[in-house]
Image (cartoon, rainbow, N blue to C red):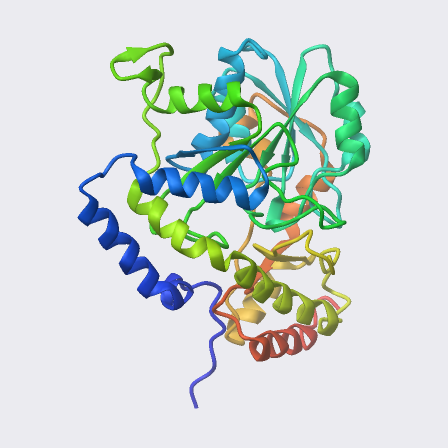
Length: 376
């Protein structure tokens, strides 16, 4: 009898329900004869801005560029200058930090909360210096990282709040009144194919309600030009492809449906996993998490993952090294961030996409409950 496999993620399966809409979107672009910019990009920008409650949206090449361009725009606007500091989570994907250092700014790594795995907003004063200009809050794994403490801290010290919203499109504040992407001064989105709503290639966006920032980002992303052959910045080429814009636009109306599916899977894990060798994430029973990843912690990660693999359960690690321990940063930054390091050594991501049915989640929970560490 063939053992059942619980797939972590298969993009063909994820995109299957949207094939007619994707085909229509691609044909529409081909038939339009407009392959850079045009109505598809403009319509996408309007839809995304409306979806999250921001005044402006600028489509860009990818999620990293979205963050890079926000910071570059602030430098051009003389809000920041090279050498200034940006507080970033010590537990995040490295893109959050690359965007800072790529602009000649200095990342200051803020410790994580062990239960949410997000930035610990109660400790922000520890990282403040006269050179601090912004906090980059990362809605990691799809969980909103924004509260009154963060806003009060930023307001008190005149700091910008920049959201890394690559993993949390559609998530809200705890009271459900506001969506990520419109909580701070600007936000960067990624539509990498693995996201809750993904393109069929790289794609990203910046949202903001600051007209000057939106104008600067748009110009910098288009070779620094404010009009044809007139370059006001030494810019870059990071324009959103209209094919990808059309595809994401076609999927955007189904965002809440896709996120609801992930919430149902997460709720099953929360209710049915009861193995003391596993620490579950702090559960959000509201809309403040869209569960881009469902990440547990265990002290015997390799053994645990081998056990799950032997039982057909595919898993992943997000992420095996804290960014400050990556070779590109470890010789420059050596902060004492024990929570972030422990998370990097213990996190395991369980299947939580359209590839996982509710019965699959129940079976995976039962498999996890049957795991016993070898040293016990």
